[in-house]
Image 1 (cartoon, rainbow, N blue to C red):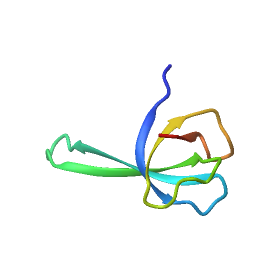
Image 2: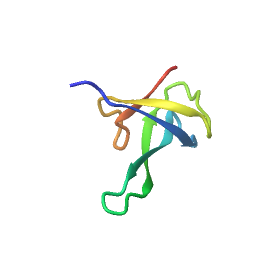
Image 3: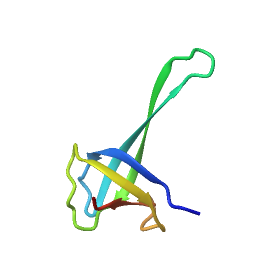
Image 4: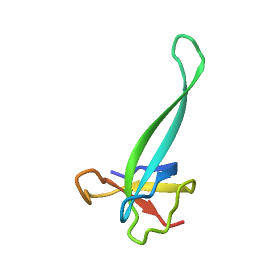
Length: 76
């Protein structure tokens, strides 16, 4: 099965080798037909601490790195 790749914005880089990435998705409400924005935060592994708050990054699924990290930052 292919690994999922998501694009989002770094919202926190306070922890060592970890960034918090906010990924936003847009969809139409099934009844109201209004466009809705929903966001979800993912904690991603950043071994060199290269990304800072506000950067747009791509993250990819990976094997568990820690209790909360299941994603890694793709170097673009």
